[in-house]
Image (cartoon, rainbow, N blue to C red):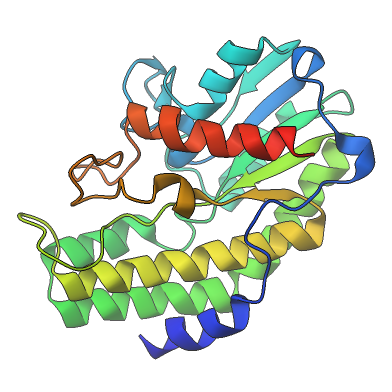
Length: 259
């Protein structure tokens, strides 16, 4: 896990709290023209009550909850389970235009091999889990920054007046102690270190683009898998409806209202 520790030490200097968007990109919620982009953590995979089964777009996902609470002038829910950066560029960014005033975006996990890495960690040995995480970490350090820069530049070009909030990923597991039926303590720590590296990279590129960053880790703190009140499903390793309502929605709302 030396890659995560070394790269993480460098990246910890990046701002992990919400960063201010340009002054021109503030949002009046009632007048907002809001477009939600991203992957399964934005679409609401695992949260139930799907309006679109193919993309697992859930009425319980934080974009839909924010829209229901704020009644924006328009709301386009483009996020889709399984999306990657090329998928967002190919299938989602066309929803943006000069009238868009608010964009949320969660992306990067699938690009770094989230699904295969989690399978290795859940069903293989500790060494196999750590190898998968090292491979993912090499991508996150060497390739993901440039891919995010290109995506963020496209988002800004297509929605020049929008406030853009990039949403990070939570720690998936409680560290330390027992986790009956779950991962070993060493695997849980390794997975969370991988999440740190991913989040720190995303936060740094969001800041460079002038976008706000909403950190999912403090939002879900104390409610990871293996806690007594988990807001992340141990079955599909995604936020539950409660996780979206009680963690992601407040984090996103705070990032929007802070700008």
